Image (cartoon, rainbow, N blue to C red; front, side):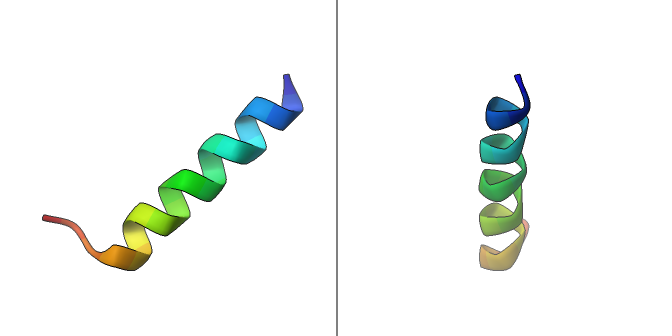
Length: 21
């Protein structure tokens, strides 16, 4: 599902934006 991939990518981007812990 492309939608799922898009959501996952968005989540990853948000996590990266916060910064690696």
